[in-house]
Image (tube, rainbow, N blue to C red; front, top):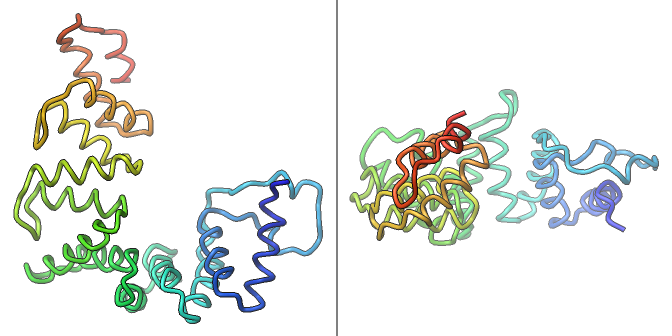
Length: 246
């Protein structure tokens, strides 16, 4: 039977024995909120009912990611870079994060390129540095990483570090939307509603806006309210508009 805690315990034992893949998997699970009971050897009846907490444990994730990264796992190298970038203040080290992102990127790891691209966007002080950051994001996007596709959409739409191309922006938003990136679903829905870089399709546009709004995108909800007020082929639906506005 499925048992997250007991499975985590066996992963921990394998990781302690030096298995690189177990170390990486354990680090990933700790970022998703692996229960603390995994660290114990004693069984409790309540353990079997536990699931992921949703609260990242950056310290434990960093510990195991570093071990796997030092053992040569390129995915772990990118993951350790992320822990050093996004972790709590005492753990954060942007310079060290870049080193690990670079190691992963040099091994053609898309997540490594994503990390370098994000770091470059935050620190760019010249057009050349910005273009280099966009270049890393493009490599991550070409590998199909949803967040990189969304950021490339933003770059194409604004002409940031790359020539402005509305059609390419909408195409990136669409690909990211398919990978459940909420902000991309909102941008793609809006593009379909307005016919920006793609043939106008009000029905599909509204569908994507709904997906984003139901996940908590406030701007998508407001746009859906506007669509219901305006009506179009059907009379305005003020009740539904009020629900979306609220």
